[in-house]
Length: 306
Image (cartoon, rainbow, N blue to C red; front, side, top):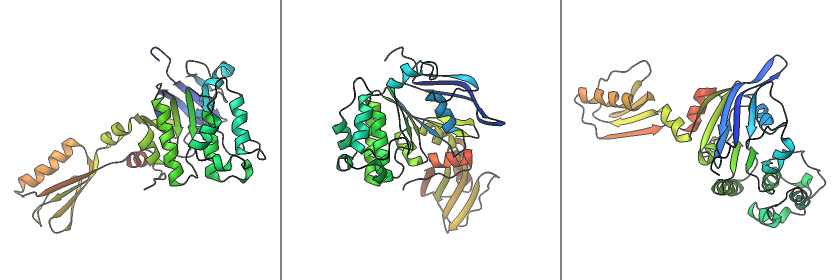
């Protein structure tokens, strides 16, 4: 899609509720055919920003373009080109899963085959079940099916695997990856950091209404460096340390160095062993994960499935 506008182009958006600024001059770009994970704790401003992107709220300042269109003034033109996951309560509770999906398929000019979606998302067995009697995980899978049935160019997925078991979660991940392979753009919000690290091409972390960090998962974790270096050498060495890099010997000859360990710091630490005349027999490191980066930026622990 050469020359096409970015999927999402948000510039200096501000959202206020009275004296509270929920979104504070946020800039965000999501490229076509990529998965962007928008992360942040509850109250960070994600929902307000998504409402602007989806055209349900006009920003108090700044602008947003979705697929090159204004989501408010061009709302009717934009809606057939995007998919939005409905949250609980967004459909008639007495309708069945099959009826709900058929209804939304009827709104689309060229819908996907609803039977295929029911099968892919493991919903065939509950196609005749009323929405009110579906489990939380089944409702989430139906919400995903509703978001995809119209063949969107851009899909907004809000906590897409919440309440799902492991098998359903992995099925959903594969489907989202297939969307990207087909050129569909995805803006994903999730509290599951392993989900973000697995799926996202790009990550944006929000905190207190502002963007705290952006980059690919690899860029964010590489910038954070390593936080644990294990070195095996002779026991009882007298090694220096710094205020930010600490050396401990929890077992004879087993040294643990903790701190912000970028390449230069690791080289310096190994230099301490060389200066002490030590014979180093093993070196192991643990690189920081997206969870480590998130915690450092927000101070809030999210859920990670092990």
